[in-house]
Image 1: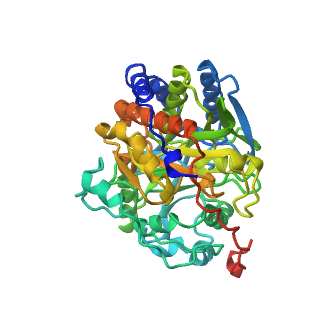
Image 2: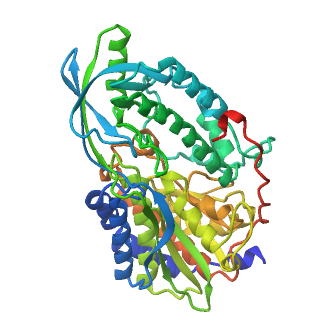
Image 3: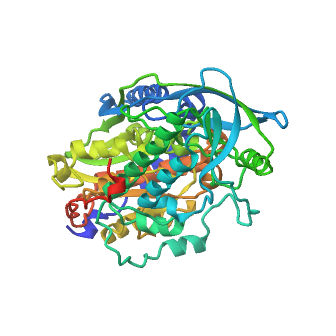
Length: 548
């Protein structure tokens, strides 16, 4: 396969038509508005996710994609949803505290009133030991000894006091030319063997963790997360046995004033349901910590309405095809995760990405382009729980990333394109260290340089659904986006709402994505592939303290 044949000249007339559709006839804000404002949060397994998936199928069918469907990924476990929360301090002063329930924790069944007790699992929220599974297991055992018999009917403050520093860096960011130039440089290779598993620790420092996650195989990353969740279930079981009234935590993300909330409890329906648990705004949480440090009793009233509608919720991806002509069995795919966390409306994570992908598909269908290959859209379930939807799709259709036993569809799969970093404008694309695709992407970006899309990043991206395809040796790429306020404010937070979406950025991203997909669908050859990854080695024996 020659790179020249894969990167043949773009039809600029087609690109112009794509831009016209994206900029002058856009539907992208209609899609993101429905998913975030009308449907709202879309936690995996929840009724709200099912509603969004059904709407997506119907919307794709209205575009003319008659085969749009839900595709099962199997049972997820418990579904969970919430409808209201009120948290009030009664003493020493009456006031309302800002809080969000934590997913898969119980409701309170009405108002409960209880005293607060400060019993942090880690006194220092930046203690690196919390990333080490053995040390986490040891700490949970020590915690049980330390607090047994002391937590009954208490609201347990489980997080250490949140430290605050005045922010000196901008909280909203668009990549500068110097930022992009730096990203265009390759990483220094790591010397550690990162294919040994189970992996028992990761750095707490985000920059070091990020670099390591770029090269650790996806299944090893997922194994670590699953083992960590099982360890936390030991803590949950202890707190439940002690009869705690509720659990209160706070977050270390952002600069304050925002609640970043995920879960305290598990979808796994074989585990005990966690006691009522909430994430409290850091400033309000710290006030309680300071009061208790002065031996001033704090009384709280909590009311959380949460339910488990289904103990055997089924996971569902959304799949649809735009059938190609000469090479219809060959597939170019694009996707984004449809699920979200539950505290906001999931607008930037990831209704924006879903809207961009749906808009790119609408544009290609509307223009009735002569596509050689079929174009497929995948809207994924359970990304926030470990890329469950995309991993299930890959295992069912393409291959097993542990054994590297491949399916027939693997041979005719060309490429997968993903978007999942908020609503920021696309600025380029990451190559997953595939040097062969660079000239292809450079050519696709040429008509978009005036829109600020000009950077090929020779690195791996991680933390989203393209990894599932990359893990079986297929060309799979994540778009590089401006960060805006994604990490500082909206990522998994209660302010992840439509107010933080920039319409023009979505329109430009949709045009570029449609162009990338068109380019891949009409190229002479499939997207160039790197050598297949080796099967993963057999897992090593676990330390005894980690065995279930």
